[in-house]
Image (cartoon, rainbow, N blue to C red; front, side, top):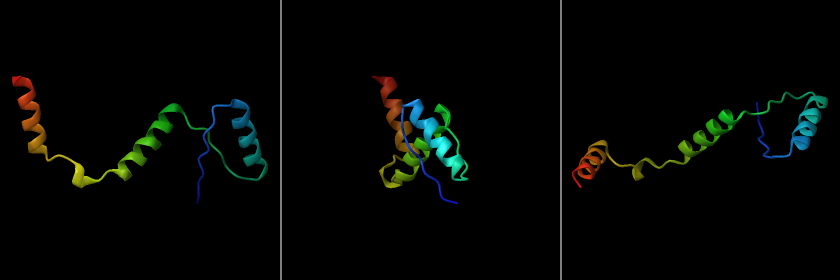
Amino acid sequence: MASIIIHTDNKKDISLLKELAEKMGLSSHILSKEEKEDVNFAELMKQNNETDNMLKEDALEYYRNLKKK
């Protein structure tokens, strides 16, 4: 199954696209704010390069040093 995401703030456009999908026999779903955030978060996770991440030990050391200042 393939999917498409179309972004618009215009409620008329959303209604028109949903109606068009239904007339074409396609299923459609309008994403809630939370669902949109989940999609964006998933995309960011895909783009994450693990080699850019700090080791847990280094992160703990960094935060311990912040408390001392």
